[in-house]
Length: 217
Image: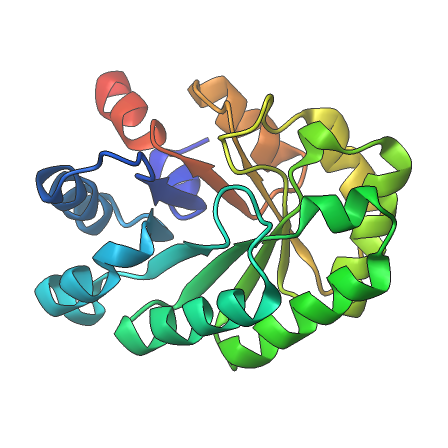
């Protein structure tokens, strides 16, 4: 694939808990130069990024990250604040304990509330596949579809494993036609990126794609 065909699908990511402003600037400068789909950053940096770069950057952030067990009201407030500060896309983590307890109606309602807080902004739902059985993944495909989220996303990158091709194929089989797929976690080579895009992912969350393409050039 051509570099730009790859980069337009990349959520260029810096979510390390010790990320400095210098790290964020490097991320954002690369995103502007290489025209990535977005930068995916901690909520605490959204306003400063927006004040510095304006609308040149598409800002994605994370909510309930990385463990997902914040109460719904806290996630909704996080979402509203993120959008107020300048975020355009929200990647939320579901309450994984609720999923494991089979409380799918509760999970669906939480996603609906956060989608309502997003308004016209994109909502991606992280289900953290490494902790789920196949039946639970299938159930979450239906929950995400019913809640009218825009994307289902594999992983936070902070769990015990990341995205797998098998999970992407499972998603494609069970999500609704209006739900797109984002793969994230453990995607560390250009071949990985190309393989996930070939399987039908619309977005790839990774901190490595831009550096890998620089090295390739």
